Image (tube, rainbow, N blue to C red; front, side, top):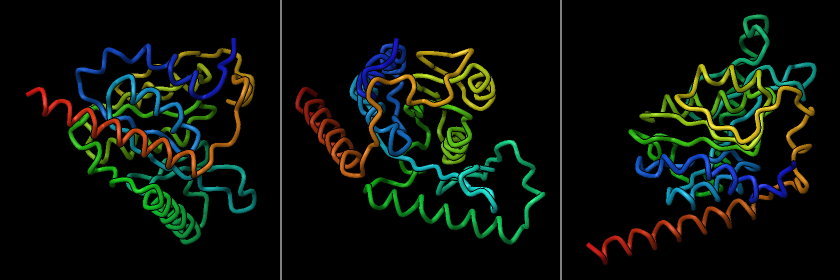
Length: 223
């Protein structure tokens, strides 16, 4: 059975994460597709929602083929390639370009830096699904480097082999559907899988921030 859309996937995923509520987690949603999923998870956990934009580093001759991934903060994470096989100056320039783009996106979305958001917190890192998992590995590495106390990977669907690799880098892995025979693309598991726009990301982040402020106000009123 496929997910109706990312919102449906987020609600179903949140059912497996209720045990984290008492940890006062922060939900880190990978942009853009992870944000609608993460918004439902954050609402269920009454947690802050922040965006994170891992960037793939493309092969110099085949830019669509990712050899690595990186976030604004945190280490460079290799895919299947031996990165020492590439010209070091080219690689450094490519990584710097992607880090700058990740920073530009964070600033455009108005988010705090990763270290400000996750330091000494349980970070629930959410996307709409995984294939190879290289961007998720970069996200988890960045969250860990930023000082998260614990990392929880949470996605609606992923191949079994990818899940096993990621168990080595996350403290907890929660996947609604672990697929032994992956269909080849995350979108194959959704009835509706439209591209998520920057406008939608901003709307969901604003909605989450307003909910967070309201919850804080209610808590103060009742204390």
